[in-house]
Length: 358
Ligand SMILES: Nc1ncnc2c1ncn2[C@@H]1O[C@H](COP(=O)(O)OP(=O)(O)OP(=O)(O)O)[C@@H](O)[C@H]1O
Image 1 (cartoon, rainbow, N blue to C red):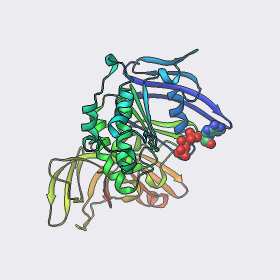
Image 2 (tube, rainbow, N blue to C red):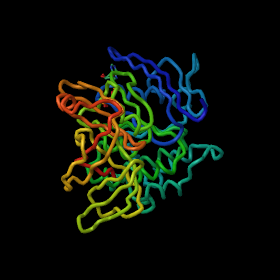
Image 3 (cartoon, rainbow, N blue to C red):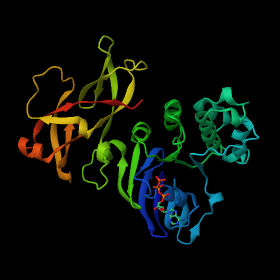
Image 4 (cartoon, rainbow, N blue to C red):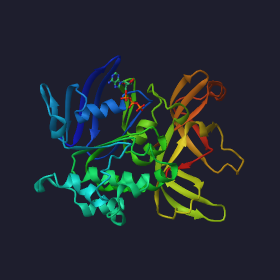
């Protein structure tokens, strides 16, 4: 299909088999998510042509692999960003950035240096040498250098893993800006649910070389039925708008499609901002009646869509809808029986914690 990335690939590495069939959107960030050793890097290497695989691959309507045809690595217009930045130590930031750009014929250049400087805040760094940069700055330069090759596809393999917590926080707004400005597909491998929640529009969940779920982020995270359940991290992401800032109690009111929630105020939040929040299944409890205790700030009516009992011994997952927005609640199978919950029933969700993803 034009406008998408289609990858139906299979390869064998010793005892490990990668066998995937993916249809991914032609723009935005797709997170590739799964336990260590499930095959995320192998998948990117097959797409890049670094690892031979059987099957077919097309990117935005162009076949990169089909039958006997398999474009070699240097004929696949993609850029690959790793944990390690591999900048040329003897070249300034400006020259590092221009290294790939100059090798792209003028007619094929889609991304210009000024754009990249602006997206990634690189202008103040241009005359500096890589050795004098912080880890986060180096990674911004590496991403900029990758983009200046005007790729049709950007592969990012745990690009933030080597950074400390503060540098990760500092670089995330740049990646968000890229996501909103770039018109190319980005495949982003990460172990961090916070990164995925904040950046991705689409998610592929892998387990033992196979895809166990793929689809739009919010919808896919709200599924209860796939074998990869994120365990402690099961939960949903939702996007909403700040409609009130209550400085007295350090709280903000967030309106989303299906209701309103209170969350803790952070200095950078102001009325009108759109933000993403994560609500974990373990932070929602269910009640049959509206709780009389007014200290429970976040109490929402919802309808039970689906119940998945015994996802692990003694625990069950319940999917609920508040308007069109899906939530997941985790409760003990004993509570499920005591409350006599069933599909289609109206209940109250008590939401104990709402984590801001910005
Ligand atoms: N050259 C190889 N020969 C044999 N097995 C390999 C080879 N390369 C990778 N593997 C195996 O393939 C599996 C998938 O590895 P891969 O690096 O793709 O996983 P991953 O999901 O990216 O892991 P991580 O999150 O730890 O980086 C692992 O079991 C790994 O040991």
